Image (cartoon, rainbow, N blue to C red; front, side, top):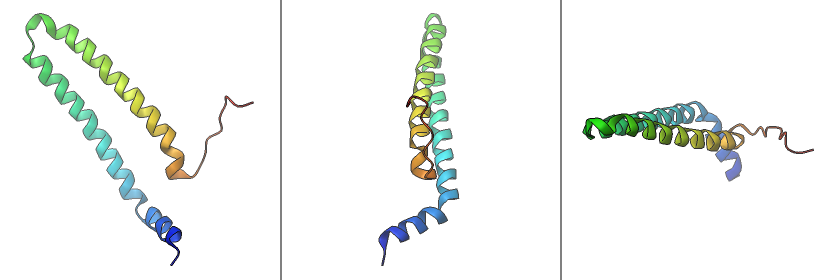
Length: 89
């Protein structure tokens, strides 16, 4: 039996479930970061809370931007559509 055809059949039949699973993973990652941020700020002394919140928020923003770049770059793997690259001339 052609294994590639079987694999593409599997990908086609599970696309919606894989998308929902990835969305659930992404949301749980965001909520985990928020939980760690809130717990760490709660345990800090009062004078360190605001600077720690600003620094932690910057780390979360940086992590999100990296995650977003990686998922955008991986999109052609799942859609079979390669976006046009504006840098090439």
